[in-house]
Amino acid sequence: MEPDSSPDLEFLAQVRRAHRLVYALIAGWALLLAAIALWPALSQGGSWSSRYDWRYFETMTELARRTVLWYREVPLWNPYSCGGEVGLANPQSMDGAPTFLLVLLFGTPWGLKLGMLLYLALGIFGTALLARRLDLGWTGSVVAGTSYGLSGYMALHLSSGHINFAGVSLYPLLLYCFVRTVADRRWLVGAAAVAGWIASLGGTFTPAMAGEVLVLWVTAMAVRPLRNELPARTRLRDTVSLYGLLLAVALGALLLFAFRMLPTLEFILDHPRPLFRRTPDLTQLKQVVFDLFAWRDFGPLPGRKYWSHEYTARMPNLILPLVVAPIGAWLLGEGRLFRSGATLTGRLVALSVVSVLLSLGNFSPLSPWSLLQKLPVLRDLRVPSRHLVLAVLWLSLLGGQGADWVMSWLAQRTPSRWPQRLVGVALLLGTAVDATVFFSHSFAGVFTVRLVLPESPVPFFHVQGHWSQMRELELLGQGVMGCDEEAPLQRAEKLALGDVAQAWLVDPAMGQILSYQHTPNRRELQVDVKQPGARVLLNSNWNEHWKASPQSVSIGKDQGQLALDLSQLPPGQHRVTAYYRPRSFLIGLLLSIGSWLLALWWWRRAR
Image 1: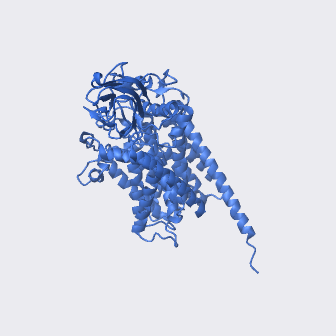
Image 2: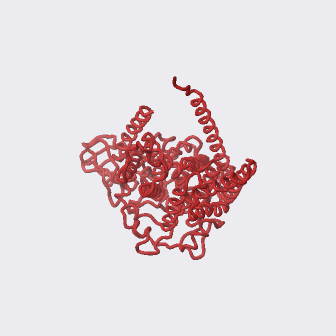
Image 3: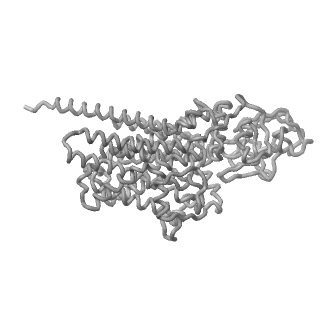
């Protein structure tokens, strides 16, 4: 007779339930630490920031929120900034990310802060998930998650206003999904979704560095896989297959978030960043050590090109001895002391070295950073020290291994579990307290501005203003000509200022504008054409993706200003509409809808 296997199945079910409970506790721990770290911001939930980069992103996000809620339009065009510019296609825009829903539900100040809370919690939890997948113990996994998720890199970048840098919190989750994909193709959907989320959150650096994380990991996997990393039955039998899987993730991300990524890619290719943005920078190796552990406030650094947020990647001080432990054991050939093994230690050390070399910048014509600047798209990046976040990820995992070594060392020398538990609690609290104290200190005094804003649409017109007043003026409903913008601008030579008509005939004798309606993406006019050849100027910058109806009306530019040619219309009254709707967005929206439906069907079928 076959032996009864039901006891074994019941035991496995109990193990799974226990693991789910532990993961739930880790998720709660991550959310608690994120809330403590962000408490200075959360306690001022309805306030706005006084820091420049925060003002920029708050303005962009609030205007997109109004476009959706006030006008029921997709935020494709931003008429308020610089005379009019792209909205969703702007590489800095965060409107395509899932956390934009928090802005729609709770308003811009609260929505951005709750978004940060979510990203930090995912950074801690995602790193712990990845560490467990790499066979680190529970204590080491949580130590690694706390070290990475609440690193000084996150603290100073986010507190300075680089809100789209929150995407780096998703790197561990992205890598976790990819590692799972190697063994189970269903996880390709998860990896592609996380990659697309990172890209849709905006910024030029975070999506590029996410690709670097995967490329570095795949290369290390191909050179020397970990134990059971490539299952015996997997179809990924060689390096080409691994890189093919990487390309599949990238393609999946492009398809799932095509509504955001296609317009952005089109904009980047049509309007590359000016050459003056590509400037060299250099960091010395000894400076990197201080950058990884020094306590710094937001401000300029002597002898450094940028301010402190571009160089600080502070990790909890406890991580330093924990990182030394696995490296020492690895060098001494004592890798058996680790559950995760010496091969992982060697891989993390190698990846840390490569990441540090990237962050050093242009120390040689053949340096990794100098070579990256010769590649398309990547050559538009600047500030090589931002690659420190990759070193923080690998070193945090090494620190988790070090925590495992401490626990194993104690288990071999003490029969009682109490010393292990006490040391484990000390490691968790030590990293948590250190990280949260620095994080909360970095956010002290960041959100102090109270604004009284209109609750419904107001008449639109342009003012000259100044870049320092950009947020306040634009949020009052006015367009601001004196602005500051990272993305390349297509600007008219001159636009009308003040509370004046926003559309006019070049020759008033040829007709009359009877009515005019303005929304962010549309301009509707009732025009009485008296003579053939009438032309209308709209008080807006031109862009190649503006269209007009009826089809007999052609749209173009006059000294960079949006212009309508009515010469094909017969005399009489006509309703003319100019609207901004890039074809890349429509194609991307259809691709995204179809891709999500297909991905959900495939996941369900595969299960």
